[in-house]
Image (cartoon, rainbow, N blue to C red):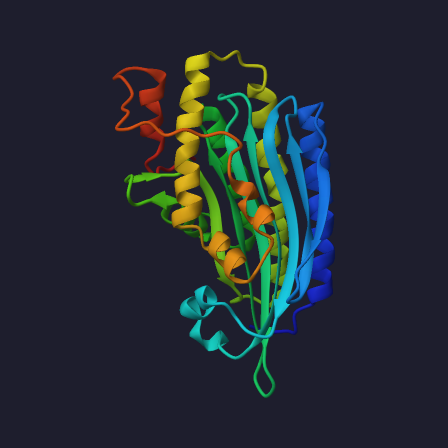
Length: 302
């Protein structure tokens, strides 16, 4: 953990990233706009939430920036990192989830974040985290390959095994144990990144943040005009239920946000606007719906 972190540079990048991603997604949507909702946190910090609803392509999506700070860590963090007990902290990041109307356009998620904690008489503790992942309902092989090719290429300058390691971490993290399936086709996930000098860690976080639009926009463009049936729409809503299950049961970011007194509406922005559950529903063998299960097992996409 060498060199003193430049917190101001990280914050400036994250604010710019939120602007860039919102502009790119709004252009791809071709009709909807992100509305901004700024908020403050009584214990320290705040953020700006940007949400699009009822766009041409995006049924609901949010791109949120937050920067919170406080004198004591929440239980979820000290359980994961006991050395943080008794430290003041700052946490900042951009997090987004996009839920399109069309079942042939995958849901996508991305997040990049920075954490800093200090106390008098001790070295500061800091790390980066983040990644992005794709959740298709009617997956197309070439889309999944493109998503992972972008992931691989942005990792390549940082080491031979970086993509391989962070791809596996993503597969393992976005796994619904109670369903015995992954949430989607994965991508990248990393956390506790501080083993390189600060500048290199920061550069990698930026590569991931900048790579999201490169990975997602071509897929939107290819699939947004695909015709779909009411049956396909209902299947999309059913599969969105898995997204809700993951976020409420397993997602560490959701838990951290709620435990640190973050803004509930912004934290739960990741939920789809509509979802459904059906008791013991199983797709019929040989249908397009049944094919999805073949994609919910980790594989080498490249």
